[in-house]
Image (cartoon, rainbow, N blue to C red; front, side, top):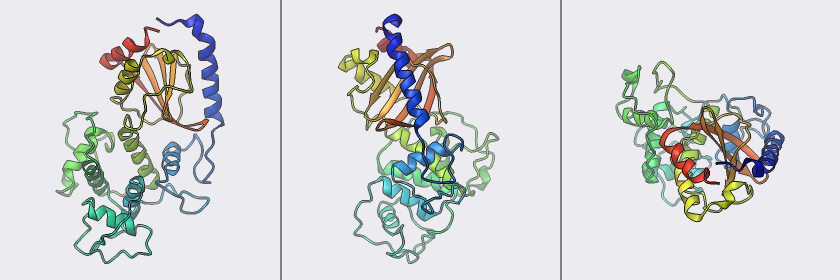
Length: 312
């Protein structure tokens, strides 16, 4: 069990440092995004930090503006590292002067988009939720990424008759993976547009899943609590287990952790509570922490983690 007497000073110090770090972190790039108050704050910070989204002006993000087809494709293109484009599409409504020109050409070349007809992409048209679902599924196929099903609910959408035939299966996939779920009454709203704040949240949810554990190294550093004692095999097992967990975005969670590690820019705090094992996943930017993704783990996954951590 825990060597609490030996660890209490270290754990308290780590918790205080984490609290001070999180409390000191501000994101003041945009006047219309309020730190730790707006529900979309973490998502905007995440997408801005990755270079996926920019402001509509130097001082505004415009979270309530609708996302267009051109904007959405550009985010995926930026995430891909903006690869060089040599082929041109047959779309006549995009020009080389448009910011989304390369993105649309890249997406069309890789069969992520097909346009509203053979010659028109409609880049300035608001992208619908069903088209976003299709684009995300195609992108995941393009990257050969298979997301785990988080939900196995077989309930059909309440607005099933509103879907375009080509989009329904993609929407079901989004629901099962919990990337896009609709409202509490079962409505997906396939034809509805989406705001920049909502799309930022969707991208954060997607990328947090697909980037872990592929970009996590096996090196433990920066926070030498008990996990510095782990063997290489135990570290590998722990990272693989964390890769099976879906972390839900939250505004901020401040707890005192029994264990804490930082691996490749991602901090994981482990706290044993009456509700189960609380794991808090945070992205670390230098000495500052942004985002917070706490989740309670019980059952088999908790037992696997217990077998690794509770020996120390």
